[in-house]
Image (cartoon, rainbow, N blue to C red; front, top):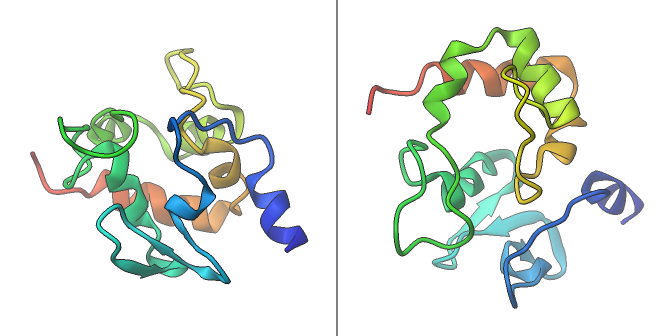
Length: 128
């Protein structure tokens, strides 16, 4: 439980009346669930990104849960080092601060290899 608290340290979500149980399975910390109730293993948690960034990660769409996240194809214009720095500082390569609703702090706690894998995934998204 201490590791879970540490991972989430510094998060500032503003989802109205939604609670931790909105995403996390109560009693099973290794499982999360999507807005439609679909259970997802933590290893597949990238699916949670779709809650704000849209089903194709090309930006939020009306009617979805959470805040509208931007089109993640923007990461294609970043170098790996810029992506890692952004996830660890909350400041993108253009000097803009990421939203407090974006969980960059726990993502930034991933090691370089894990962040490189996320970067590779995002830079190889199909064209929208």
